[in-house]
Image (cartoon, rainbow, N blue to C red; front, side):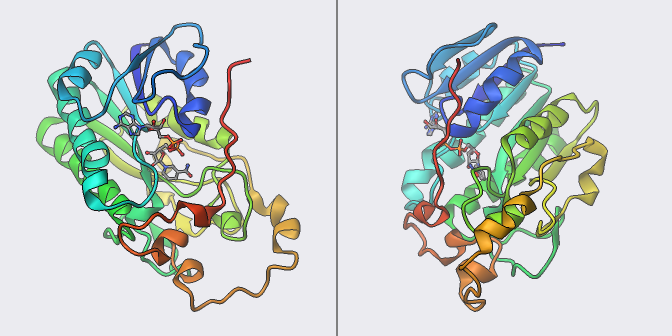
Length: 280
Ligand SMILES: NC(=O)c1ccc[n+]([C@@H]2O[C@H](COP(=O)([O-])OP(=O)(O)OC[C@H]3O[C@@H](n4cnc5c(N)ncnc54)[C@H](O)[C@@H]3O)[C@@H](O)[C@H]2O)c1
């Protein structure tokens, strides 16, 4: 059992599904977010309101922590100066504080948008060079490289979960890209409890028949997703076919973010339904 886990972005949608399972993996879970409150706390959980841009607060809160699960970020495309603090400098603050405090490993919520400009009919593995589709995706590339550098220079391990889309399946893209909440929890669990990871990238995707990515190089993590979006295919594809295969939104891995202009919000294109979990 770990002593202490730090979760950033605890007030977010994915954070809401991770909080309770993480309390089962350590004696203490410290949840942080820029929001002032995140609802009722679980047993063994404490909450602090902290901005990722505040290095001294991040350094203080990561003392005595074994593993940081870094999910806090602005989750949309936006002008570069708006993302610079939370998504770029915030990542640096997490890694530098983690290094100074002897944190063993960081689990990072990366994204398919680090490689979003690859064509959809290319089955991409975890080793392909970055091809970000937005400034948002560029921050994911930056953080993956940051993680690689801190491992190679300082021995700080990190596992980068390139999540495709962790939300209710509501469109044809999600038949390939869906990551169920249960599989997300299993993936984070394996990223934490695998004895040795070094620096590793793994796609966060369920066991979908139509998955467009290859996780074989991350097999040693023991991530074996159980859910499959195919069960939604009949309902989702009914009346929506054929799509325009020439549009970047359809043809590229990044979907709506591959089609949006740099700096312009694209999150609406994903049709995400907010179904954050709340403590009973
Ligand atoms: N949901 C998905 O399908 C998906 C896909 C790929 C990657 N991701 C990544 O997963 C993570 C969580 O995504 P989510 O869907 O839960 O998004 P979310 O917006 O619900 O959660 C993000 C959280 O980060 C917090 N945050 C933002 N700026 C902050 C700051 N400056 N300091 C501290 N906290 C700050 C927000 O308040 C929010 O609670 C993000 O890093 C996102 O990029 C999500």
